[in-house]
Length: 325
Image (cartoon, rainbow, N blue to C red; front, top):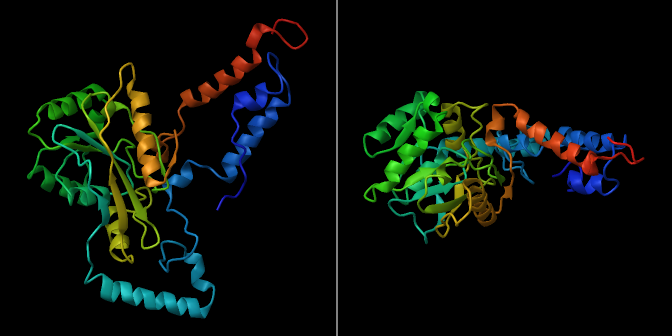
């Protein structure tokens, strides 16, 4: 549910529609309004928390405030705990829901998908084998990675190497050049998003060439929350929450393969693939970097807004009264 009603107008339309070529003190109100909207309902950081449901599904993780609504509801919640912990956990069925299996990724290609959870890998791997591209982890996830490396070839990097984009692209390009190797599975967002939107796709995987196989993954939050908030839950805690949920239900769509068009750069190609995935999964498209989960907004984003306003104010190079600005 939205807290405020946003007016989806750009700076150019709202400010330039009133005046051009001079500064007005009233311009401050535009930036003040946008600041208040961001504080009241930030469309970015809310993607890094669990999706809100219209109704409570009797899971503590979804909304703990409903526990005290009435004793009758509390009793139902307790019964639900007994069912989930005593019946569902020991006899859990690990099927993953519905897959639309046309356009399956082929060897020598790159499979890209939106990222919500480590379960994304397991769900896709249950339909076919992939080589993974990702960062080396420690702990339980690192143990799983080491086991996977013994069975197939993957492209894993240390955190320090991930900063070397040329090295990453080189290894991916060498992998897809061998048509005997498994298709590479990449999550271009680089972090888990709560499955309500698709955020910025890193351009690296779209610069190496080859065929891109888009895959849309959409979980049904009514039965359980598949989103992994890695800043709040450890892998062990997350695994426990998943096992004690009602179920993990998801739809997977294998979309038609895509290639970069002539004269199209990697950024536009990545945005085109992202839009196709978001549209199929019924998710919104956001231009923001998922790395904002752990980092502050880059200065370049702030400077971009400042440059836009400066261009509006200094257009034609004159003040409204005819004086040089």
